[in-house]
Amino acid sequence: MIGLVIVDDHPVVRDGLRGMFSADPRFEVIGEAGDGAEAIAVAEELRPDVILMDLRMPRTDGVTAIKELARRGVPARVLVLTTYDTDSDVLPAIEAGATGYLLKDAPREELFRAVEAAARGQAVLSPAVATRLMGQMRRPASGQLSQRELEVLELIARGSTNREAARQLFISEATVKTHLLHAYAKLGVNDRAAAVAAAFSRGYLTPRD
Image 1 (cartoon, rainbow, N blue to C red):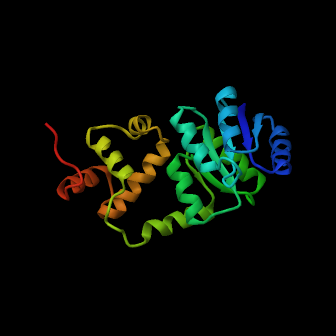
Image 2 (cartoon, rainbow, N blue to C red; image 1 turned 120 degrees about the horizontal axis):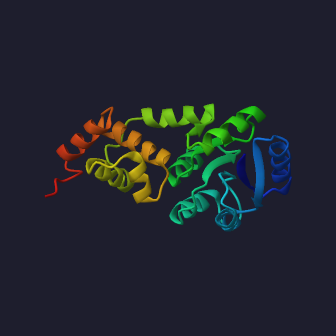
């Protein structure tokens, strides 16, 4: 049984999700929260397997909460469930460490499958969000690696696996993969070894003794 915490600032939405998941024996709703700050406290106390997280909430928003949960080492997987699928919502949530991103119009069974996949640590994206991310990847690359992309590549160059890099940077393994994909696109490569080689050749990384 998957322990679930539901985070949304609308009580009616929380009630609906609680009723839906409680009626299925695969899930147990162990807690709720009305904003990000409350979600952090509830998750630290109850240690759920998955947190269903809304993004736009008063006091503390979802992205801020996701970052803080990762910083505190809370092992729960965060599955964003929101109405919004703009770049300004999707990318910050994924980069903050969300395991998945679904829209609130997702069918019931799709949502159930997504929560099960998130509990296993698998990345989950709604089709609309996946299409948006692919479009982002296909845009002309800026060529300038972000600080986080450089940090990931440096750890990979030292021989870290994605999981080890995620642990050292306090982000999810799925987020490490996202940063690597962005780096591949900017460097014009298709794999880890080529990305590290290109980063060295272009001066992003420097050899150490």
